[in-house]
Image (cartoon, rainbow, N blue to C red; front, side, top):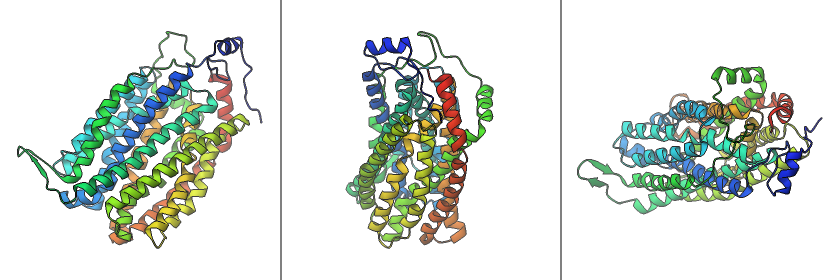
Length: 465
């Protein structure tokens, strides 16, 4: 199989002499220091986005107690209230990211969702919390298409999975800090009385978690503005990116439908395998093993901060190695193998007799699952023309958040409330979701491996510069 390696051009040689990084296709990349600083800023943004959306999962029980809601209503808060605005707003922002300043889009999004997170801290009931949660979703929709596009223009092809993997470190750090910080807040505020502000707003103890995690994001949005917007590949210096009609992007996807079914649809179904257990995991440990939520937060956060970064970095290095060896389907194959390995572990975790056994199996499963995080994002970015990447990124967000993060927690809740009819059977609801979604995802991703290799080779040949 051809590796698709390009012959260095005179421009590439000139760039190398000048000490500037050069891609395999001869495109002179921005200075590496700018790439690293931009990646650092974006990674922290990603940390805040996951921190702000995840902390709700640890607070479900006190929210249910204070607002008197059911598991199904809680699932709506976790999933649909966040994910529907996220996916819908992401379509418009994704189009904007294909021709506007992507750095500014990321910064504005960060500021917006951080304010919405703080609004959750002053919500007075289910409806107001639902609206604030929708604001978080709409705000967070802007970072993904813009951030992924920035990384793809800053790094050579074999390093894109590294860049998206580092962003994944931010995501896992956000999840870990959410559990750690949320657990610490619950520990320190338990027993404290609510705070009445002028008789207008009552701040309950658990709501301080939202206020304290939302405020720093507003400040970091200003830091994001100190990074630089990279030049878009394929454009002459100073040339503006053209707006690509949705019909043209849809035609591109349709002509290569098996590949995008795997890289977009398969990844969305894989997200459904993960989203439900992730949302209901703390509640499961609390109900099944009797652990306090503060303890769950500390253990879950510590495990995430240790295990997930190792998996992300290992996946990025594996992708880089396989790409350099000429494996055209490297990124998608890593996702596929990781999925097959995690399925039995994901089921076994919920069969453990103790909480420590559950966390031990989950740690191994999480490490393997994280191998495919960076490669999974790189997979669709690298086969898509620059002028369409924002729209494709928005489509991925729509699938992963509307289809996966909105529906998967709700499916688990519906299984519990209406199929098993007992909150004590939460484990079986999670296992059933895992088996169904995992099996479908394996078939959908597996069928796209060979077509993906051909699409990757075409991308190297036609629009890698």
